[in-house]
Image (tube, rainbow, N blue to C red; front, top):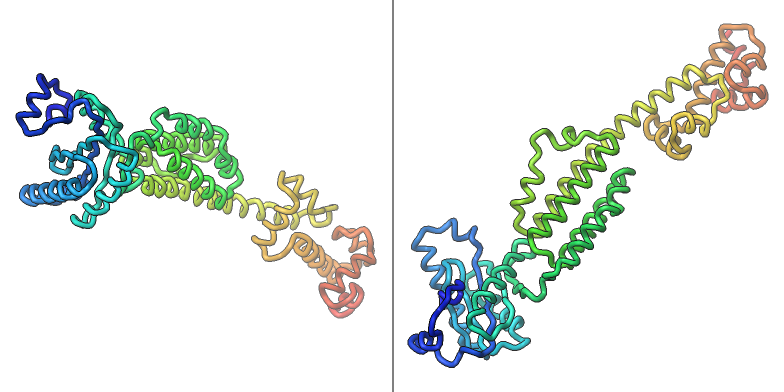
Length: 379
């Protein structure tokens, strides 16, 4: 049986099976399932413990196989793997396997996973069904343990992979990176991960989607003028770490960590640039307060929207743009009233107000006195 599973040519199959006491199985439909323990757990055990665990796995599989409706052969193929060959399987087999996996998990108190190959009739194809079951098992790295993975459900034509990959090139996540929309970036990333999950891509294709997303993101950062070395450091291992990913949840965590570092860097850079911008605008207002200055004109000067400039200025100074400009003008007006004999309308013009009546109203609103009263009180 091991020779058949390994794909070795076996002469006189019927005679050898009869010799082993296995009869009447050639030219009958069969299907191979593989139940496997996590290799990481075995690595922590000594040789005796590994042997006992392997024996326990085989015994549990044999007990459960004997209790099901199919004639089943159980083969202890590898130390962490047991092979079940189901004769005359039907469409209920995946459901029965889920029950077996659940029972083995409870009995061993360890996570297990099961891969199921396609149905064949020629025993020479036993190795084919076995390889398919092992291929299906690889999906445990992305979708977790204690599940049955049927090769027929795993999108062998890869159409979904190409659809997801092509979609990345015009994905809104890159526009959201450009505008710094952090919550939208997180939602975009979750949608990409969900697409991968629903497509049931194998581990390698899932990692290819992730690596393409990372590379396209790095290209976007470069386009925006950001230095990837500043964000991730000279010895970044993101792409190396990607190859070590063991589950879809780990892949999700890695990508979220990757984008969180980007968001943090962009946020800090923008905070620094915004601080510089506000300081430059303040200096301009301090030096040119007498000019005909409006919020819209300043926004045009610095290539930002008036609403964003107003918000930014208020956040950084604690005052809105108009109040800051008015304070600066009134401060200068107070100096001129105190130290010069200029007439009120002359001072009004000197600090940026063409209408002396409007200037007087602004002055009184801010100081509680008219310009004339202020001059009298400071003599």
